[in-house]
Length: 372
Ligand SMILES: Cc1ncc(COP(=O)(O)O)c(C=O)c1O
Image 1 (cartoon, rainbow, N blue to C red):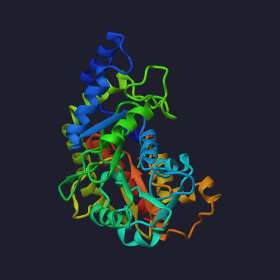
Image 2: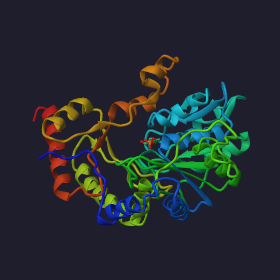
Image 3: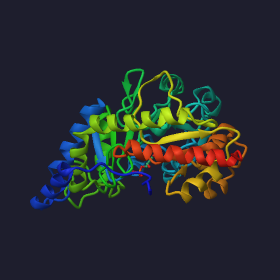
C-alpha cells in the first residue's frame, strides 16, 4: 500500500467554481476575491480580510505594517515553518527565537519577557499544528511592553483558544492555503485584522503600492505583486463553504490515530492543552519516546510505502540561520522536539484502513528497534 502524505479535498463544487471563473474571462481583481475575503472574515470573526498569494506574503506585509526596519527585533519560536522568521529578515529585522513549551510545541510565554529589549517591535506567536499558542500571557506581556502581536495562524484556521478564534487575538493574523492545509486555494493566504488602516495598507502593498484612489500606473509606496487570482479565490470560496465538514473529517482521522498510537509503547499522541477549546487539525504529529529512534522509524515507514516528515526542523538550525550565529544548544526544548517529532500521513480524505496500515507499520518499526 502506498499512502500519500497529504491530499486536498476537492469535490465537483470546487471544480465547477474554478471553471465558472474561466468562463467569465475575469481572472484577477474581480468579484471572487471580494466574496472570499468577506466569507473568511465572517468565519474568523474579524472586521477585515485581505487575500494574498501565500501565507509568506501575508506575514511579510504584517511586518511592514508593524513598522519593522533595520535591526528591529521580532520574537518568534524557532519550532515553526521557515516563513515565520524569514518575514522578519525581508525587512532587515532580526528574528529572536524563544524556546517552546515541550508539551504543546508552542512558544513558552514564561520565557518571553527575558527576550524583550528596547529594539523589540513585535511578537509572532505561531499556532503550531493547528493548536493555538497560549495567547493570554503573550498578549498581556505585549501590552505592557507596547509590542505588536502578529498571529501566525497559517496552520490554525478555525481553531479556538478559550473560546476565542485563532486570528482574532493579535493586531493582525495570517492564514495559508497551500494544498496540504485544512482548506486550499492552490497557493494563497489571507491577512485578517480589525485595524482599518492596516487593512488599507495591506490592500495597497499587495497591489504594487497603489492606494485606493491611485490610477493604475500611480504607485504611492513600494509595493509587491502579492495578489490572489480569481480562480484561486473561487476555489477558496468553495472550500470555506465546506470548512466545518473539512475540519470534522480531519478530527475524525486524528481520533482514529489517537486510539491506535495510544496502544504503541514508546510513541506519544499529540498533547492538546486545556486552553485549546477547538483543535483545527492541520498535521498529525507524534513524539517518539526515548527508546525510539525517530530517523530509523522514518526509514522503516518509507520502505513500506508510508511517507513521514521530521516536523518541524527548527529554524535556528537551518544553514543560513546558523551562519547568523544560532547553534545547537541555544533552544533545548525546540531541538528535542526537532529530533523526536514525526508528522504522519494526514488529510481529510484519509480512510480508517489507511490509518490502520500506518499504525501497523509504526508498531512493526518500533518492535524491530527493540529486537522483537
Ligand atoms: C506556520 C506557518 N507559517 C507560514 C507558512 C507559509 O505559508 P505559505 O506556504 O502559504 O507561504 C506556513 C505554511 O506552510 C506555515 O505552516
